[in-house]
Image 1 (cartoon, one colour):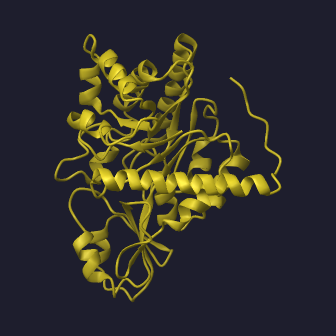
Image 2: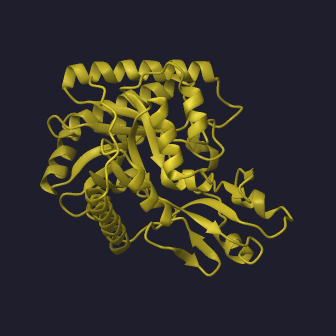
Amino acid sequence: MLGYCLNQFPPGQLLQALDMLTPGTGAGLWINRSLARELQAPGALEALRDELHKRELIAYSLNAFPADDFHGPVVKHRVYHPAWDRVERLEFTLEVAELLAGLLPDGAEGSLSTLPVGWPGTVELGQARAHMARAAEGLRELHERTGHLIHLDLEPEPGCVLSTSSDLVAFWQDLDRDFLRVCHDVCHAAVMAEGQGEALERYRRAGIRVGKVQISSALLVPDSRLARPALERLAHDRYLHQCLYERRQLFADLPDFLQQNLPPGELRVHYHVPVDLPELEQGVKTTSEEIATCLAALDPEVAHLEVETYTRIQPEAVLRRELEWVAGLLQASESESKTAVSRPLRSDRKI
């Protein structure tokens, strides 16, 4: 299932966001705590399900990362609140899982992407792991009650407690592997200069499944000095734009990097831009080439793909162009796989 993450639209504009998707597309919904309360009103969830059915859209995945305002003038570190050591995060996650179960087609699998624990130094890791274990128990009970398998997918992000695939594997320990999985974000791995195939293989070796892939593209600046005017224009107050300089020094935000007087060097910036653009402007390239690399390395069992471009609000034409571009990559990847010698697949674990 290929869809588009609608977190670029405020919750109050959900119906307008659905207008931008063509029939048969996966609707990657974003439901924050405010909208979740509204959907619990009598008949509200049923009305949304009917609207999705009328438009022939499939609500297959839900972005449960930002729990509150994702469109205020300043978001920055607030996007990680509440962290996973807070019971509010657990309660919110199970709440929206229940909503997703009410929107899924009969027998369909659902995915919830969530934050990578929180921001370092602000989270009690033992409590966070305990809450995740309780989330897995709640999702198992939901599966037994509704027949819908919904997994919670942790999404590594630069600078967070889980920045890379290695961080996630080290953190996992004895966590559930059926109802807890990974959300692999192509942009995030690219910012950390982590090979897409390398990250996916690390999860595979650890026996941790990828439940969802967010197809996204970061900024790649070959020469940070030459591109400085463009970088200054791109810096803003709403979101964090973590930066990796020369593949070794991580900055929490683009303004932090711009305050330094560093020699010219490569800079990778967390900045979700249209996935089909190889270059944003002169001197500012993107990591769009890594999307094809990721798709080629995926296990066939990974069923949920979601384009996520939110830093620059996309008009309808661009959104559909991105989906068509990714669909073309998938077709090309499938054609290549039919002519290549397939490696043996590991056996699936059944629930």
